[in-house]
Amino acid sequence: TMNSITQQRDLREQQETTTSPPRRRLPNDPNRAMTEMMITIDRLRSSLVKETAALKDADTKLFMELQDEKLDVARDYLDGMSQMISRKEDLKKADPTLINKLEDMRVDFSEIAQENHAALERMKNGMKRLGERIMETAREASRKERQIIYGGNGQMQSGLKTTMGVNE
Image (cartoon, rainbow, N blue to C red; front, side, top):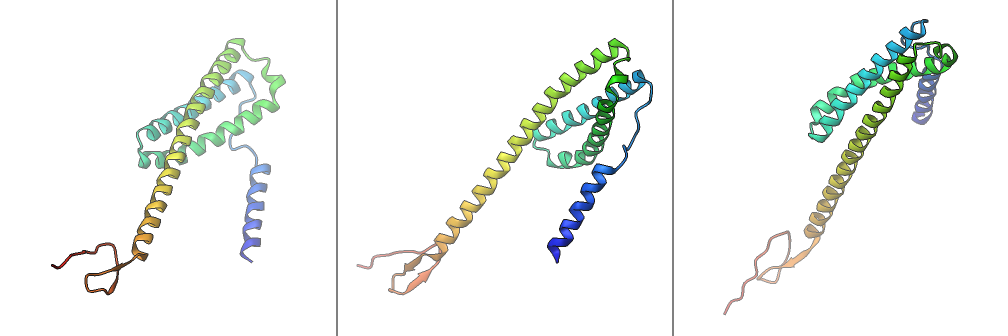
């Protein structure tokens, strides 16, 4: 059945995401690993800034064009962060300046991500209101079409426009 095919596909996708090796391995050297993560964070930050600007400008075309790039960088970010978490003891040996810079970038990135999330929420709410307006307009048009109107000759008419006159 279609439902079991969908369930099998979902299970396969879940297994691929949970068991697949990282797309890119961070260097063994803690300083180089942190530097690479900072580059990845900066790429994701830049992607979110562009996306937020596109949302604020209501530039749907640019917004859609940015999605593949954002997903690609987000995967690199998630892979890198999971590697860093698993190596957290080793990373404590990194240069303290790099550790502080990475923390500053993390805080900045968090603020950008919150702003992006707010812009996405505004877009979602706007689309919801637009959908509601379209449905209400369609319902109103449907109600008007179903009204029965009596014409000047006493015959029933159906439609939106009718004229009524008085003969003297």
